[in-house]
Image 1 (spheres, rainbow, N blue to C red):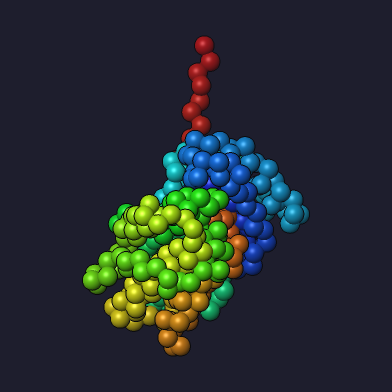
Image 2 (image 1 turned 90 degrees about the vertical axis):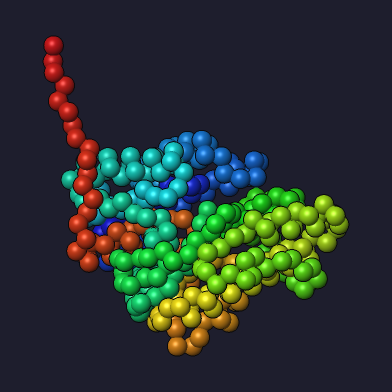
Length: 327
């Protein structure tokens, strides 16, 4: 079974192909060069870039594997959540492909897909907890099996990755902020500045990062940017402290066999190290490879594949050709 996944929810155009659980293609076109001058994603520019690139990426993925488009058995495409204009490009392309090939199409939840890429490993045991840490989302899921996800916590304001980007912008670092803050933090002292831990008294699994962002802003206004490595290291430590605190709460609430990570921020090696320290030995921890943490088509194909093999019917392709009366 050959499954193709289309991802255009934000600023990466992704086309992925899998055969059963084997990755055949993972092609991603980044838009960092477009949005870096603005310090963040500009939705209109993002959707235009998807439109310009998706055809070429699809053809490249097919040709690299010496496939014919007729070899595709199933199509998956992200349709939520995300930027409306960007999503429209991917969904339109996927629906056109499904109509042309007369093949089933699955409309995929972007957050579920980030976690489902771990399923390709083959060793995930259920029930599991999943944590998506990305630019637009910070969400906890209780995962009963390959297809049943229950959101049990989410950000109440800024997402984790968004906060990294905003703090990076405050410090004058290049976009995206996350990788650059991580790089600067390696040179700093994480105990030099005592930023407040968000929601310290809360026992919920929800997140809030806006207060931490504000605290960094106040610090910079008062003391300036002379010690950027220390600011980055201290900020990064508090983020890790906060996330690890929530993981501990989640593990007390839910008896699980596996813990899954997903999302672009999950690439952060410091954060990975801290999370590994709080996951007990009797729970399997799964972290996708670096290129599979970012938005990509493979994760969408993975979710479509597991929906299919678990007998979930494909979404109805509502595109119809309406005959035009000849006058």
